[in-house]
Length: 256
Image (cartoon, rainbow, N blue to C red):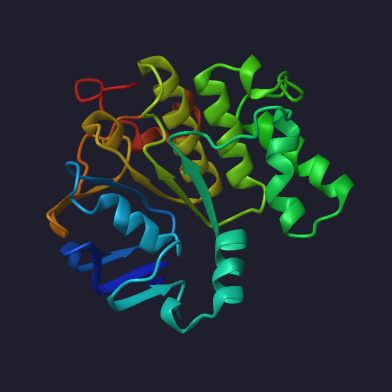
């Protein structure tokens, strides 16, 4: 039996805001297995984004233990944390975080530049990643020349180029219309089903969350409940990579 890629044990996070003490996480324990697509849901202030920051090694907990692929994160120095963020995890954010006057292919190359990968290899990987997300005809367009959905696909391509095992997405469809959101979720599902990427996404949208195999519901800094998604939404563009025996039955099907 495989070991969890993410193993969180009694994690807490406390912030001091002036004279106010904020308990953002209150003893969270959970595991995520390799190849699992998991959504984290909860109302504003529930702790879901704080938990994502912990899982992505963007912040340190106040107490508790976090094992990433068997490594105790709290024992890593800054160089070790940087290596994890650079090679093991790909990040996708609601606001895209693209450089405005830079082409799609140059935006996608950025993580590889920081990683010291040579120019020819950077270009090859960036073009391949953009083709993977359906932007092979938009390689040299700047963000202002792309729709919101296309900009988010550039951001996904950028997250892929260092070949991370885990992709973490914080409200990846929050700025998108329904159709663009469905297209983005189809890409995440294909990455999960076809390439085996572990996907963790934070969302406030239950319909988006139901594209995942599992939903972790947060409230007041704790896991309120953790559910397996029985009638998972399969986006149309992802159906071609899902084995027929795993497709929802016609009467249960709900495609984005």
